[in-house]
Amino acid sequence: MSTKLSERLREAIEEEIATGRLLPGTRLDELELAARFEVSRTPIREALSLLAGEGLIETAHRRGAVVAQITPERLVEMFEVMAELEALSARLAARRISDAELQELERLHEECRQAAELRDTDAYFYANERFHYALYASAHNRFLCDEAVALQKKLRPYRRLQLRVRNRMRNSHAEHAAIVQALRDGDGEAAVRCVRSHVLVQGERFADLIASLARLADEGGRPEREAGPAEPARATAARQPSPAG
Image (cartoon, rainbow, N blue to C red; front, side, top):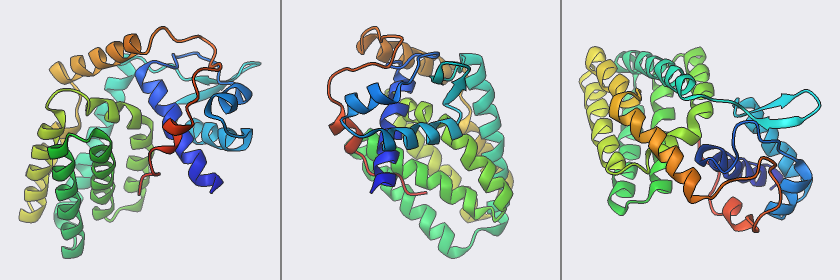
């Protein structure tokens, strides 16, 4: 139970980092976070440990846990590497994916379609995450899968935020369809092109992401530099199940 709670808390804090509620450099005090989320310090400590493992927070000398500094330039670099890891996964999967794995990918693609039709960004986010994890697994390269998952976790809040851009869910689903078709055809080069285009954040998509970050920070008001008490957020932390990997 504590593990599931810590995962939900990680997700809630992760969301606040992505939207600017918790700015880079903000100190994360366990006692104050526990009071705000109405939980004990133990799951907060576990959640912060998970976030540290994802690179979203870091430990500063004499300050404890602070939100990591991730610049727009750094985000671009991370998405560039993510695109290449996923492209390699797709190239290998085009040769190695089993019938059962392809069926699972198609099932997850259908989950994404249903969520997109309902305009449910949370449901789409989780189905999309499972879709990408299934793609990594289909490459049958454990080292590659581990590296892709590790970077995916660092980019998680920003990939979630992308889905709030107008028409992004619909476009993402269409891109998934092209990926699935390329894998079905066993066309590694097509799979690489589709995945790379799907993941890369550049041009208008990068501008949209940065605009979303700025807008959501403004909507949330000017956050305090200290992650101090605010309105009770227990419901926010509890509303989502932990994602399937």
